[in-house]
Structure formats: C-alpha cells, structure tokens
Image (cartoon, rainbow, N blue to C red):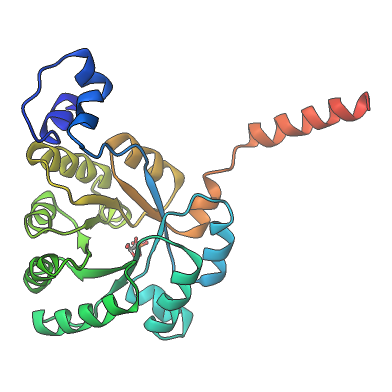
Length: 249
Ligand code: E4P
C-alpha cells in the first residue's frame, strides 16, 4: 500500500532506489509531498475557534448549516468573523439542492474571501456543480460522503476535499475508518489530488486512526481537539517534576 501511494503520486516513472525512498526524486520532480496532517475545527462558535487557534494547531475550519444555526447568526457574518481568526481553508455549505442554485450561492460565498471553500452535498447536482466550480478554480469540499464510490465521484470532478463522515457510519454499525482506508487506496491508485477530510469525528481515537489511515485532514469539534492534549500520566508526571523541583529550591 505504501509503495502504491508513492508510485501513484509520482508524475514520471521511477525506480525503487534510495533516492526514491528518501523523497529526493519527488522533490526533483517538484512533487508536493505532504508532510502534515491538517487539523480543522468543526464549529461555528467563534469563541471556541479563538481558544483553539491560540494552541497554534488549527489549520482551518469547517461549518455546516446545523453548526451555523446553533450560533443564531447569519452564515456570512459567522464565516467573515472566522476568516479574521484563522488563516486557512474555511468551509461554508450551500443550502440549494439544485445545481444552478448551488453555483449561484457558491460564487457569492467565494467572493467573501479566497479562503472560503464551498461545501457541496454528495448528490448528482452537488457533483455536477463541483465539476463546474473546479473549472472556475473555486475550491470545494464535497460533504456527506458515506461510500468509496461517492468519494471517487468527488475526485473525478475535481473536488478539493471530500468529507467522509466517520462517526455517522459508526452510529449505524459500520466502521467509518474502513471508508477512509478505501478512499486512500483508491485516490493513491490513480493519483487523485482530492484531499481526504475525515469528518464527523467524535473522539481522539478517530483522529489517531484517521492519521494512521493517511487522511489528509481531520475536522473535529473543539472538545475533541482539546482532548488530544489530555493524558493523566502527563499531569501526574508534571506534578512530580514540580514537587521535586520545589523540594530543593
Ligand atoms: C463536517 O464537515 C461536518 O460538519 C461534521 O463533521 C459532521 O459531524 P457530526 O456527524 O458530528 O454532525
């Protein structure tokens, strides 16, 4: 699987040499090798975004109509405020269910700021709109993805991101992480540039497994991001260090 990934992302044929394995050849080909798993916050709550941004690990933000509704504010107002806090991709979802309406909303949202990513549902109209927006160089996040074939459709029409919903699959007795693994393999088989944005993350184990499966991004609620820091052994160890230091100072 690892060999497939490296090979599929390489624009010219390569042999399995030391240079190849260390990534030197990839650099010579000006190939962007991704060395960072990105963390996005999945929220419309600007206080949470400010708090998490202070940790220095927030690369972007995802919202959806439910998260925006919780704020009691307009989407435009919330997105504009988020843009001032986080300098990275900010997903804003369209409400229209028909292609023309999606395109109209998408073009308006894209005018707010270059960091706005248009979130489109994984429907026939959504995929069709995705293809058109990608020719206009408007970035997209195809959401509500629950199967590998759906993810393939998003990649074929040039989606910037695809959002497989891990937690919601787990909720109905599937293993959401199997989907991440399948999409990773399929995208790497063909060298699709669409980024896998693991969504509907419910706990730190989802983040760990998404990283092991090679997801490009994990979007998570504030509470989950905060929990990534937690370990009782860290707390206990720090207590002991500080107590020992205090005894002799
Ligand atoms: C992703 O972009 C979605 O907003 C989100 O992850 C959905 O998560 P949920 O299943 O917890 O609502």
